[in-house]
Image (tube, rainbow, N blue to C red; front, side, top):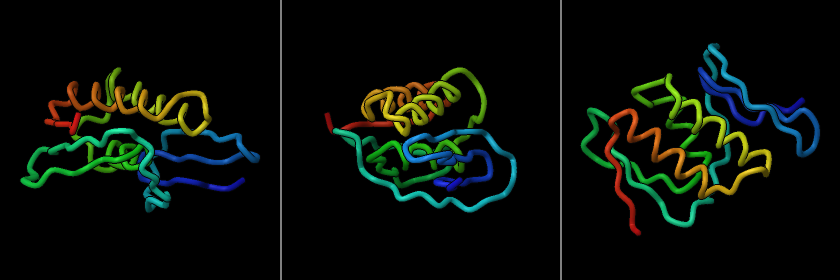
Length: 117
């Protein structure tokens, strides 16, 4: 089993080639994810207490933000976004659909965002 992604709250493992599992985890781990820009249009978000917006270009980056820096780590929008990120990893959902779930999680958490579109 290969671990693809670790954070204090989330773990993604590859059980066999092409078969990945996404799970919540409370252990303290460092993130180890190669972040690819897979969204058609990036988002610019401003987390509470940050002056400079963060440009998010893909599912992996969004997953790291949700797991490591998100101000709200519960609720339907948060859980739905995590599930969408896992579905992208599984090849069951398009990355831009996960982007929409990330926008919903941002709205639900009161995180300001803008887009280039």
